[in-house]
Amino acid sequence: MKSVAVLPEQEIKEAFSEGYICTILADHGIGYDPVKHDHFAVDGLAHFHEGEIRVQLKSTTTPDYSDGVLTLFLKPGWIEKWARSKVPVIVVYLLLEEDPAKRLLLTHESSTLSGYAYWARVDEFARDHLATGSASGKTYYFSDSHRITTNSVRDWHDLLNEGYGG
Image (cartoon, rainbow, N blue to C red; front, side, top):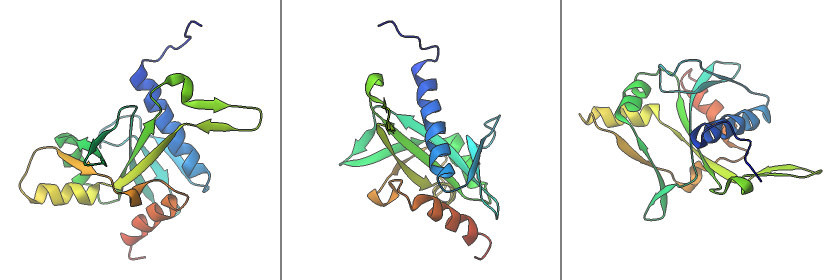
């Protein structure tokens, strides 16, 4: 069957990432707005009562691993911008099925995305990295504890409140 796709593969992955974070946040009654311009190396804002956290979305169909641990290379420009943030910045890293025909299963009973995601707070990581005097990029290693679960949104809310003494 001939493809009807208009978007290039990278934009398709970006659209899946945005849909994924919107769904996770909506399940908890939290709003998400994409940012129009990528001035702060973030793709959107998650809106809690107390304020917003900044969210950078990343996705891949070919993840990198080091000794069995998922990794993501963080570019120097991102690190510089995240280090300046006074509010939490998180990266949400979505791992998608490589075969486009297997990414989304739609039936009469349900819709299932064949993928999973990890998250990491990167503003503190960026400040710690720059404090070493390095101006280079750095690889982030995701632990299993940063796999997105039903508790992740509460964890993000807690990160935000820590900045306000709560």
